[in-house]
Image 1: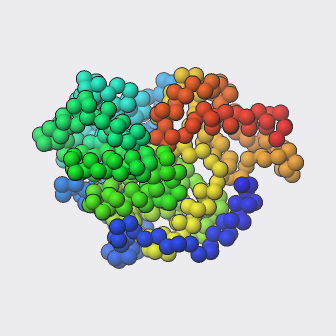
Image 2: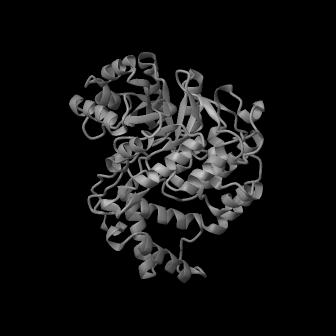
Image 3: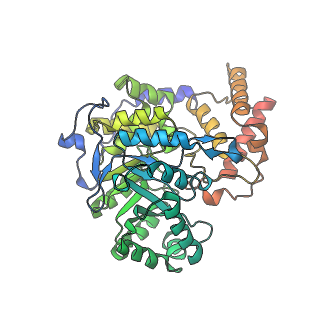
Length: 451
């Protein structure tokens, strides 16, 4: 789809669309009229019922994108900036911090623990994960669990997750957590109070979700973390991730609190295609595109917290503006978001959330940046499609210049040998080598002028 066709569809997007209803028969806060009517940034942080009587900030801090210093391979977390972000977040009412032993090449837990340890332990909730992807032996898995206590300087975890389960269904779950006795171990840890709430983060298809949720009768999940945003609500591919509408409905029906990940799809929905962003601005000129995405997921009452990986202070400030004096979406706005999701779903981008799970590439390729540059060009209508285009030379130069600026030549897609090591780590189930080769073919045609 070219930019002109997209704009035509966007104009037609004002036509009628099926109404969105809250799954499980629940009403949104706007329907019940219980909250302030404007997101002015004034007022208190919105809090939700978590597990075991917790009052959790609706805005949660995802600690996968802390600011870094140094180049890609030797980058370390900038602890001073992390402390400043945590200070501002806590002052703004944020009390839920989510991390993992694998985030930022193993640095996130320690940095998060340093920043939080300056506050009374009972003033915030820690969520971390059992990320035993590579080695799920009992010895290695228990070591990861115990190391997390040291890294985060705590005696207990408020929310503990089995990390990124789903693909492979129950058989994969059994291999990682049951056959090695880890589930029995974790249940005892929960009983002892070192884990206050036990749950899992999910990536996978509907049948896999059903298998794992059925284990609630055995393990009594205290909460579940799902990928939920206005695009995945009804437009997920059904393979790497299920429709969030279905996931939400099943959890709501069982009364299980929900933590939301990827509310803006790794930043993609913070800067959507220009036709969508324009419609957001026409409705509420002062609000960011990201705020629309956050308000969508926050308008569903079973959502306990919405995680955002806020690297920069301006991201945090914008989110605090959204979640303090939170304004629920009404039925008309939910219908509008459904229309915007339909438009974006027709856009030919790579569904990368920049989670960095594919990194580091053994051949030095910067996979997330390659995909981001391509996606940005597509969203902004800057992808050359044919040498016969009137502005082909301009588009060609813009793409190639930007590509070399954003991704050094030695880290570009032409260095991919297709080893596939990255594929098994991608939560979105993207065929990464295939997409890299596709983009490389496009770049080569641009260079030769043979489109």
